[in-house]
Length: 126
Image (cartoon, rainbow, N blue to C red):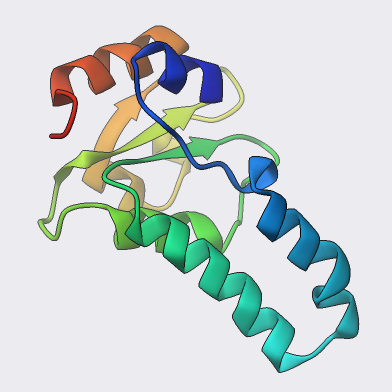
């Protein structure tokens, strides 16, 4: 997905590619402190605040994630349906109909091409 976004000339933030978050996950969280949990949440929050669009990846591994609804709600425009938010559904394993209601408040895609098309329609800074 990162390559798909990059192909449209945009930057991206992906938690598994963030060296600060990776460091915090291995060093701070192992301490088991509330401060460590707050640090992790703050790193993610800063990334979301610096994002203009969000694409949630809905896969069998992400089912039940508490972060996906938060990330969609945090980064999307403050309207019911946001053109700044999309979900990519990993067919045939995941479909929007099998996901919580909030996924219907974002554009739904099912392929890398769908994501590229969605991003290109958004314009560079839309």
